[in-house]
Structure formats: structure tokens, C-alpha cells
Amino acid sequence: MKQCYFSQNNIKYIDYKDVELLKKFLNPHARMLSRKKTGVTAKNQRKLAEAVKRARVMGLLPFVSR
Image (tube, rainbow, N blue to C red; front, side):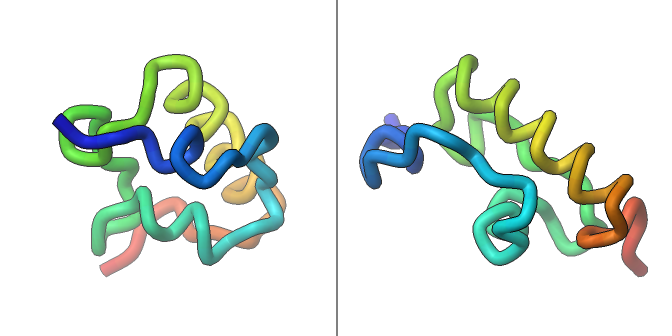
């Protein structure tokens, strides 16, 4: 079982402006990866989803990538 990336690196706040970190949890089509693949806890997955959605609305991340 994978360790949660955010707990492992002692990251308390998932910032929507940190695009490089958010890209680690997106597949090549810019869709979010599941918890099973990333090993992120449920609480951090919800925070991550919120950060990705905010970054998409602000134009920092694409909604769809081809």
C-alpha cells in the first residue's frame, strides 16, 4: 500500500497555485488520478480535488488535454 504523498512530505495546505505539484496527480488527459493509484488519503484527496478545480477555473490547469 502506498504512503500518502502529503503526509509523507508534511504538507498541511494543498495550494492551487502550485501547478507542478497538482500535475503529479493528473493523467496525460488532465483528469485526476484515483486514490488507489496515488495512495492519497480521503481527506487529502478532497483537498486535492478542490485545489485542482480552483486551478482550472483560474486558468492555471487545463480542463482537457489532448
